[in-house]
Length: 335
Image 1 (cartoon, rainbow, N blue to C red):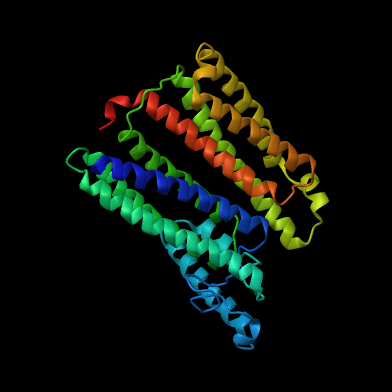
Image 2: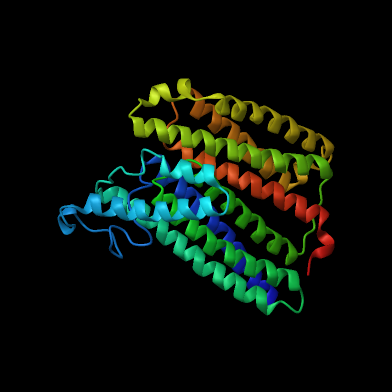
């Protein structure tokens, strides 16, 4: 295999791994294990989760809560110093920040597995950056994107530590998701640049609008998910969640209709080759399944199994649209 072929395989493996992390992260949240480990990068101060609470000191809850409070205060201080006073106040005035995190063997291991997957992706990103640097003579931009992706993963890891430090403060989780989508986009740009693409579709503007709409839809969806996290924390019964969701849920639901219309427009523009286009067929299938899962979530009291699947399909749909756009309109940039 030549260097381009090796890099193509490494890059594709990394993209798949990022999607796996998105799925695992969704499972962590749907199972309520986001604070399974109250510290980061260790878990209850250990490199692997303790087998029982007897391995922890009697005051372990107060100890880790205070450690989290200290980190949150430092973060608030930095945010306030650079002009983000409202964000700093939101952190300091979060009533959940000082809540203790009781030990749970299952939740600790669920969150720990999430972190292990994150470490594996970090190693793949290093490998991706290294091989992209080997191709810098063929494409300086390919190498530059590889380096930026590595820096982004480091930043993503730091943001992940803040998610834990702020006890899953709403806003940080959505930002965490945005960074994951940005990482997928960067890796997809690299994939397009090293592939001998043969498929083109019609409709630059429908693709671009659909991409933007899909991104907005994912952000709206993570906002709805954050509301549900609050309901879980407050002990509200699952059957009452949908009825108590705010306007963000209804906007999110209405956006799905716009996405269906845009997808239909794109299919109509490519009606002559739609059935012969694996990419368009796959995109239509993913969007169809995503809409179906949205209906299941809305009308069947948000079943836990459907939540991570809904998030994963949304992320995959975003990646597919972005890939189609790049492969159709940026072909001249391919190595």
